[in-house]
Image (cartoon, rainbow, N blue to C red; front, side, top):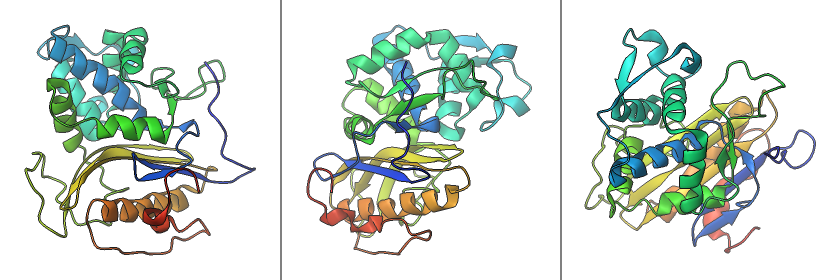
Length: 286
């Protein structure tokens, strides 16, 4: 397993943005994903359920080795046995680290990697279970990948196959709308894929990732103009998370325009690029 690419330059930020066929900014740069990497696990679970390899009602015991701090609820709940379908909902909705580790143990990293390869992922992969703390003897991070591969994956979640319908339903439960959709008019509790979206609004199903020096968001956005898959990955030095978040939100404004919202812009703090200029980018890296 290789180390993830470091941000360009000493102490610099890398903000990679991809909307297939519309925007490509550093989309092939391998970056740290934080919890957006859980999408690969969720895809393996959804594909297993759709193929009959997994029963969503199968009950799995949460072991002590699965327990992990950080995001999630299982660490504060008394139940120790959960259905696979429930663990998937917890992973997608509140990015539950303990649920993630339990599912990873049940499926195995090899199974997740095989499903990821079948979906076209090459540089996007889960390296390890979630650990707190992560020691020098462990793989360097939970997951790495590229915005391009993740955006193409999100664009393929069209609901035509059972596993993509499962994925959309789980991602629509995500409680974290603080990144790409934060500045966009949308209803965060609207979990049904709409047949149409009123002008001036969007519908979003997404998965976010948050870690030291990482802010990331991958999802599906539907507006009155079009339906798109997107990925925004921001990596930078520890302590610059607010500036990274500002850039992700700026990218969200641009992505909202691509989905049919009126153009709007707001310059981020910290001297980062004006990501809201992205709709004018040609295909390929600027």
